[in-house]
Length: 188
Length: 150
Image 1 (cartoon, each protein chain N blue to C red):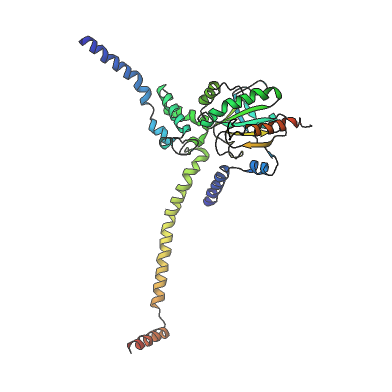
Image 2 (cartoon, rainbow over the protein chains, first blue to last red):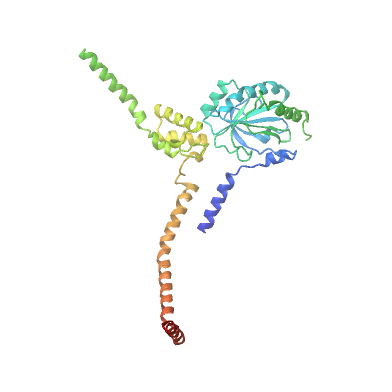
């Protein structure tokens, strides 16, 4: 009895720590995996979203293309990525695309200071425990995803967005955003 | 000169009294041992990961503001979840983590007399088998030994 309980706890623990590769596998096959849903407290908000401190569910945003960016204030590459992400938000905001940050494993005060210091105006939610990392197959920060209107992941970028030099990945990433945006709203 | 020196000493004592209670009430090393770095899963006191350094700075800042050890710990648990605790709390479901190994030890100690008795009786059986040589076996043995004498 005790052994079974111990084995069960061990199994649950190991499964909970698993990192999924379903998003990348689907993209490699030219498919789109459903974006794992989450419900997290809002860190910084914009009109049309729940105010700071309230819960936001990803699935409630269905019908709108989303650029999901996983970041943390202690992450070096996130600092170089922040202005790029803000420019993307400035450009796509009026076109119906939502840039949504997910701040992981971070102090709330540091995360808010990061938003203020870099003049970030896109909304972010807080995931202090980093629960989003496993389902999204995240192995570090920053990472970005394009989610289509049906709530499926169309692109996954494992690393910072970059718009300069040979490592520039922004044009390819934005091409997917444009593709998803052009697909139109789902029929209900 | 003497008066200035005394004023300085008094000012120093007042400053120490003002600062000491806030700092002394928090055991920084204890907290850093009890809490984990959220990105590397090692205790804060042995981690130099950027996230761990920020949390250590947070602890020092709150300690200087007069927060108690439990207030700081609770604030970090609220922000990072219970996974930030290096050792699980001794309450609720987490209590099982403490009880299960203890149950194994108790069960092992309880089984010890039975295991010892079982080993002892097995040895006795082996001894009995060795002692109980049949006349045929004894005869074969004697013949074998006699042949070796030749």
